[in-house]
Image (tube, rainbow, N blue to C red; front, side):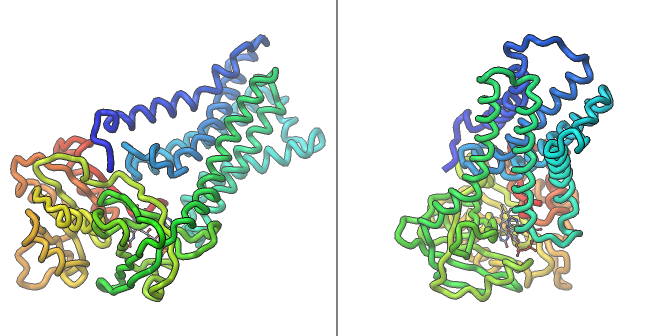
Length: 444
Ligand SMILES: Cc1cc2nc3c(=O)[nH]c(=O)nc-3n(C[C@H](O)[C@H](O)[C@H](O)COP(=O)(O)OP(=O)(O)OC[C@H]3O[C@@H](n4cnc5c(N)ncnc54)[C@H](O)[C@@H]3O)c2cc1C
């Protein structure tokens, strides 16, 4: 269960402060007991950017290490946003390092001359190429036809290369790492980053294999949408909050590349039987319909902060679209099982009535909960009196009018354009950022 204390509120800023301290830590470490004269502003700036860039690249491993205690107080969206933006800044710093040094002191071109030191030149060229690819590949992955899984593996290998060669470069140049302690600090920091990578990609997947699940049922839920239920095998299951997600793997090898995130759609009161509702999209999700009951499965989690658990408000409002309904569904099922009767509004966008997944169950839940359902249809039937899609600022304004003065918390999950409209309209209307939670179903 998420914490509800002040610590939770300040956890995000505290992590940001710690991140900043760790990113700039190499600079005081470099200056500690450093007795040589300065080499001029530009050279020192180039070196400082290189140090900070390398530290930030190492910190990237911590951001994606899936430690739940890091994730607490910071949503997945925010974490991915930080990972992306810090990654871009780290790459800019790392690339600015040689550019500034070569411009300030052309004698450094000898570092790129294979006749002077071929292994060094090769290592620096490979590391520079790795850093550029780290930045460029996410932007062009789809256009280049690289699957998410292969991109993710390549991303890890490139990051490893960049950090590993970066460490070698720092130690070999040795200007700010004289003595015994400083090289050890650098080796420890880089080693820590690489251990995080090994933990995420190898240790944790092996641990997850010790708590297997069995597929109990696969049932159609709508057009190209399937619910798949898993029962815990030999362990009590998962303790989670509605709205959280798990990483699903249907392959027994811990090194399998196929691990996909899905929000738990079932009730948080039934942790030994977990249900995911999955829309067919690409190669993995299209296999769900063929999964046989009895098959082994592995669930890693729970992760995420996209949950109304622990929040006290006059009303909880889910604004969801398409398969983004799954966190709302888990919340409603959990409320039913807990006998909770606090007001909840689900604004649900879909192409048409037939595309509303869980429609029958949602409508029957209105009898058990203080639930108001608002459908927003792109292609409504001719006699439709309700809201029409796509979502606009007016749609959001009408939803807010219905709520009156209610002090509401918003949970937004759905297609990108819908989320953008809802988020920007709520922000423009002055709804505090702390009351608006968003979860995007695409990480890259
Ligand atoms: C927090 C979260 C919760 C989600 N919950 C649900 C849900 O409840 N129901 C549902 O149907 N979908 C959900 N998704 C989306 C789901 O993870 C993707 O649709 C699925 O991974 C696509 O895999 P694919 O191979 O079939 O499709 P592809 O065509 O290979 O991929 C389509 C897109 O899905 C994303 N993706 C693909 N593989 C992965 C992966 N291994 N890890 C992360 N992202 C990947 C990428 O953005 C990719 O561009 C969720 C995603 C996230 C991030």
